[in-house]
Image 1 (cartoon, rainbow, N blue to C red):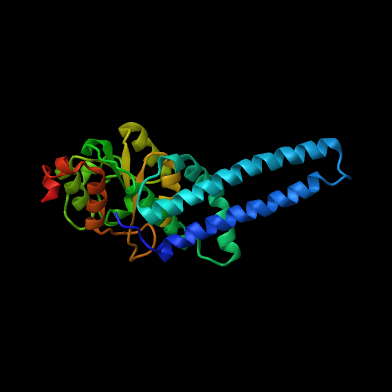
Image 2 (image 1 turned 90 degrees about the horizontal axis):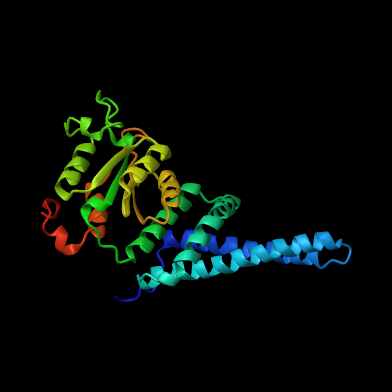
Length: 266
């Protein structure tokens, strides 16, 4: 596969802020070390500060390797197994700092989270994950259901009468034709319940940037492809989705020879 000669702007935002957060940790480390070697400190204080510096050094070095792994994976579109641990640490440990730095520079948090989702999707797509349809879970938000619909489908999505007034009908058709699992979640607790119940090896999640970000982190290390929903009426109300984007995400996870035998391939 050919090498891309650049990282797209949307992905650069998160990667750049992640790099800044690691540099900030390095500056903090220098400050702690300065305090530790100050002769006016007691021996106990010095031991405590040096211990803290040691932990920070470890986390920062691993995170730096993780950022390198993220950049190389995006550039080469190739999974590098050795970097999985450092990449996970870099994201989980420094993501809160990334949001703080973004706030300092007046960068909208939704843009940062959208960039994170893009980076995550690239990392997932670099992996050779070819599964059976039953090993894939499609998580969908309840706000896709038409607000005027009288049928409660959050407990059982098959209560949908498939009138076609919202995307739920299309998602159920995708489920039936491809043989994947589907769960409609009203929040993180129910989403985690579906993950525990179905034990998927991969997830396609539809949600806003905020929920996708938290969901991707919560389900780690299960690979998640995030598909951002459309919100023409504002958040959490009569949202929509491009079904083609969902189909493409589902197809990525399914074995090619198996996909060709499914009704969803036509």
